[in-house]
Image 1 (cartoon, one colour):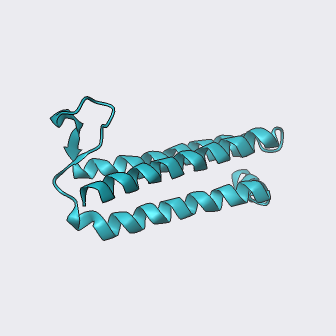
Image 2 (cartoon, rainbow, N blue to C red):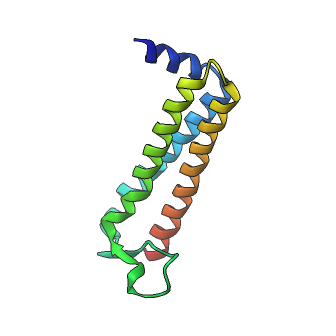
Length: 119
């Protein structure tokens, strides 16, 4: 399959491999914190800090899963696009994977702050 070969070729790049490992570590941390703290989460959590201070900031605790899910989707899309362009534009591929990893870590920081703020 052509796609598998492109992924293997791209992962041989040390920078892309490093960022991909960073993303995997962030997902493992998401899972670990989520599993360990899930039972202690209240029924509603403050998720929408951009809204004025009111009950509108509160959502059911299940909505905290938006952060890791969007991180995975964003990384997968960026990684797929990076695979497509890797042989022609290596720098663009590195930037795509790096951006996705950084977004994942920022989401992780937000996740950690919310979870440990309310517990």
